[in-house]
Length: 430
Image (cartoon, rainbow, N blue to C red; front, side):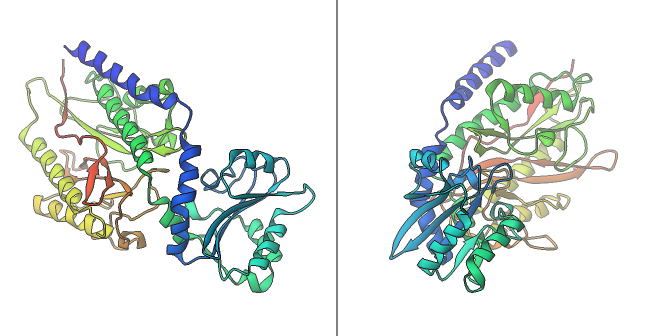
């Protein structure tokens, strides 16, 4: 029966990840995001124009979002409203400008002579339009909105002159409004990737031999699945997956600890598909002792407490609710069930990176509150979130169950991207 189950899981995995070998849908999705979501993001931010400077090798974090991922010499991308009409354009070195025109992503591409400066020509255009304010990717709060380098900023302000340079502002709000919302077709891609992420974790648990297999062995199994499928890590490769059968380690790498009977195993794992969308899901297992046929009452109770917290957070997630209030709903359950306090937020946006732009689901019991926790949830946002329960192991060290799942926000509330884990995965000891 076990062999048959593994074969069925493997077949299911193949059927899902085979879809990610197709040509990436990102070019068309990006075009739609620029045409449908970016205009409203500019309006909501009360910004006339948004300027992105691109270059080879050390490019802006949002280069692939605006179409300048293949920049060689410096190029300037500009998005603006003029006479009540949204317009997108690039000032690009000749040659590359031809390629940009072929992509048909922007309304206009201005070819810049190789001996000229795209920044100076863009500055002349801005001077002619006389924009009231111009957003640039300079931010102390969001790394995704902090792409302009110091030397690029120097070149831009020199080209604009003192008066126009005083109109420069951070693109923080534009990036927030634009990246925090995902199109329905993006959410469907994330849904399929989430199913694969969770399925591989279950398969990894089926490979464990208590007393022999290490946390690092489980991690290597998942790395092999990623290589076979041609997908990448959802976050820093050295810390993905984080397989932990011992005390809490936070965001960390899997170690050579040998998995033993009585261990609760946490696997925190994420993949990147089409080189664009990421997942972040945790699955938990319990290693039965030789005389056990089911989960001990105390561990089962901790599991049920964590699920209760997850459900409280899930029900709190609705359009118009603050992120901090979602965290508060989950913390209330933690307090009522006797969990140890924890430093981690209940959840975070997930999409283009594991910790994406959008409302933070935290802050209700923190010493300092992230500004993003005061932001409102909205339809089209996607989150990874946990239900927590933490207790002390026999050696006095803390252990936490954090039943992490992924959801999208709909008109009426949250919707799981895939069915949540309801029961601990049981691993038998020989």
